[in-house]
Amino acid sequence: MVQSSPIQHDDAALTAVKFGRSEVAMQYARIGRRLDDIMFDTHRYTAQVQSNAKNNMQVVQEVLHGTKQVEAAGTGIRVASSGLVGETRIGTITFIDAARGGGAGTEVVQRWMSQAELRATQSTGLFRGGRDGVHYVTDAANTAAQRARLRLALPQTPEVRVTLEVPGGAFSAPTRVQPRFNMPGGGMERTATGQIPVKVLGVD
Image (cartoon, rainbow, N blue to C red; front, side, top):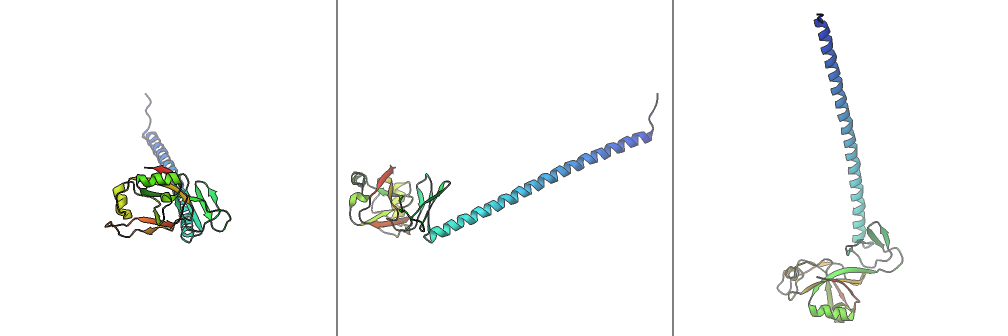
């Protein structure tokens, strides 16, 4: 029987160790490249987020300065300033520019009211059935009647929450509701006067 020498065993062991080290090195290299890819993607995503935030801030500033009106399409939620004309649609956002020609269009608001007021509004097509005085709405009314009474400082608990389409610019900019009728207020309200045509979009 031929026996291999210790030197041959040592050479084989050394080769195996070298091969194993080579595999480990390649694994480390692959991991390093993957980490580089992850870091690159992270930096690119961060840059995109920062760019989007800058663009969004620009839109907010333009809205606050009264040069733009923004609506989240399909939601009925609109941020507006008075005197807006013209419209440009980009994706799911509508920008209405004061610098362009055209009409201001309509906007969507909400109001808590009695069943009797709702019937008068529906039958006449006018806000509050065409009654005189100051008209109050809010951009987003609370879903609970009692909560709405507290936040909007209403004289009595209303019966229905109504979503309305009104002419754009008919109502003032939102202001904080002051305490009245022994209610704390604190919500946001908008006001208008006169005969305001209205379309009932929904009743809750």
